[in-house]
Structure formats: structure tokens, C-alpha cells
Length: 471
Image 1 (cartoon, rainbow, N blue to C red):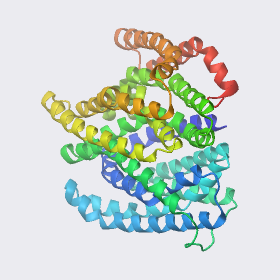
Image 2 (image 1 turned 60 degrees about the vertical axis):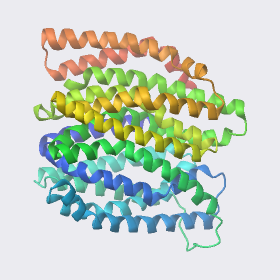
Image 3 (image 1 turned 90 degrees about the horizontal axis):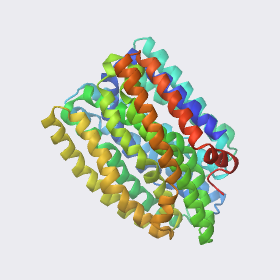
Image 4 (image 1 turned 90 degrees about the vertical axis):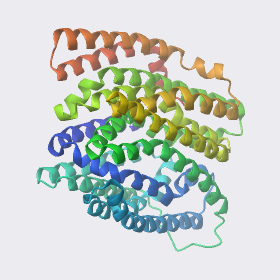
């Protein structure tokens, strides 16, 4: 059910994007993209890692749960006020007066987000993962429909605001309806200091990863304006979609499963390798395939006005080869009791990416392709400078050798290489030589890619369908 709901969510998301891209154009996405880094930063701060602490702790009583709930609500209210206070600053920073009203309108996103955070964490803690996935799908579809309706009514950028609020409120209402727990007033003597300490380490790591994921967008928006940011941010978001499809449901299982197995080192190592095997099986073909079909994918989704995002998506897609593993390593370090090591690693990684983005923009400007320069700096830094040492530290913490990790990639890497050749040949023959329409070309590439890869990895896929990565 979880996988089916994730696939359905991506179909709904892409359908809504295709409609809104055409109705709204590029600039509204650029305007919202200027506010999103602030919203994401405050979202990290307002949860304080307490939602992850709820999942990680083996036992929690009602007083502790209630204390965590009220702390989260208080943080949400504070971050909403901070968002509103930052409205004039953002308008001044980007030299875009419209950002003042837009940021004020989005200030309620913070309290709307935390309304359902605790209840969603409890549903995941009780492994009601299918229920959570379906609820997220319903909320996503509700927000998408509301956004499209607002766009059709001529609301412009405000349609994207409506979309976010409707999705969050439907999600919160559904979580409260599905999870019977209700908070009571309990703020003191609840024994949550260790939870707060754990959340602090996790929050620091999340802040550093936030810098990694958003500094490029702030740089593009500040130097190149909202239209360029709209192109870049949407290309980046599409690159991350296959990662989200796999890692969102997997993360809900991976952290609690590894935490429970931490005392049995052999079982723990087997679980980690099993998760990595599954990630390789899905992420490697996704990265290669997306890099090949990126130009026609952007034209099919958004039309000619989004064509410039195609080359950006193509270079960003290379990062997918490592991004899924990169995201999973946090669960490995946390489950091994080394959230402090995760925070230190994240700080170093953020510093490396900051330098890379500045260099990528400067080189891209000199070549006349600044967005491609920034996108390429992200992929190359991820693949060559950041992921290898981060992987080595995490594997050593888990007691796993690099050779054992590489062994999990063998089948997927070989099948991906063959699939890439087939899809690439289709791209050249049908796209460049024959010149068939983009929609037909994309459909042919996807069909050939999925069928060839499924055929080459049919035994691996059958095994995971029977057992899953947790075995």
C-alpha cells in the first residue's frame, strides 16, 4: 500500500504541476521559491528534532508525549511570528516588493505544519505506514485541486499559497482523526531532557543539510532573479522526486528497524546492507534515466516556457546516483547512537557545498549558462567530494566494509548501464533523427527503460517484492 500510495502521489504531483506550470508560468514559482528557504529553515527549528525523537525512543509515556506536543506547538507559533517579521527583510534582500505580502501570507505555514506532526509521528511509530501514505496522498490531491481551482480563477501566485495551506490542514485533520491520542497539559517533570538533547543534535544536522539543499537557490534568486530561480528550483524539485518516492516510505521503516536491531550487530549490519541494496536497485536507474529524458520531460510538463530547465535537470539528475544513499546515511548514524557525528559531518558537508555553489555560479556565468553551472556544481560535489567520505564514516560507524557496500550495487549498476544504452539510443534515433513529438518520445523512452531494466533485474525485484529490504 505504501509503494502504491507513493506512486499515486507522484502521478498526482506531476499532473498538478503540468496544469499549474501552464496556468501560472515561471515567475510565481520563482517568487515562492524566494520564501521557501526561510520556511524550510524555520520548519527545522520548530520541530527541534522532536518528531524523530518520538520515533527513536523505545518507550514514551503519556506525559512525555503531551510535553513534546506542546513544545512543538509553541515552536510553531514562534516560527510563524518570525516568518512574518522577516517579510520586509526578504523584500529588501531580493529587491522584490511583492515578497512582503507573500511572506506574510505564508507565515501561517509554520503553525499549520505542527498541528499534525505529533499525531503523524505516532502513526508511524505504530507502523501504520500505509495509513500515513494514503493520508498524505489525500492531502496532496486536495491541495492540488485547490491550487488549480485558484489558478483558474486568476489568483496567480496566491494559488500556490492556497495549495500549501489546504494540503497541510487536510493532513493535520486526517492525522487527528486517525490517531486517537489526545494531549493533556503536561510541561514539567516529564523526563524529556534526553529527548531534547537528541533532538538538538538532530536539529543541528538538519540545519546544515538545509544549507546544502537551499544555499544554491538563495544564490540563484539573489543574483539572477525570480524567473531564473523558478527554472532552477523546479528542476531541482523534479530531480528530488524519485528520491522522495523511494526514501519517504523507506525512512519511515529504516530508522525504527535499525534502532531495534542495534544491539545485535550481525542483524544490524545485514539490515543496513539490505536497505542499501534496495536503494541501489531503484535509485541508479532513476538517475541515469532522468538525465537522458530531462529535456523532453520539461517540455512535456511545462511547454516551451520551461524548456530552459531541461539542461539544468539533466546535470542535476547525476546526483540521484548518490542522493538516496546520502539521505539514508543519517538513519545509520542516528541508529548507531552517533547523532553527534552526524551533526559534525553535516557541518563539513554544508561548508563544502557553499564553496562549490559560488564557484559553479561564477563558472556558469562566464560560460553563459549560470543555472547549468550551479546544477553541475551540486552533482559533482555530491558525487566526488561529499558522498565518498560521508559514506566511509557511516560505514565504519556501522561496522561495515566498503567492499560489502559495493557488493550491493553490482546487479543494479550492470543493469542500469544496459538500460542507459537502450534509452540513450532511443533518445538519439527517435528524438534527433526521426524527430517524433516530445510526448511520444518520452513515452517510448520510459517504456523501453522500465521494461529493459525490469527484465534485467527480474530476480532481484521478485525477491524484494517477497521480502522487502528488511530481512
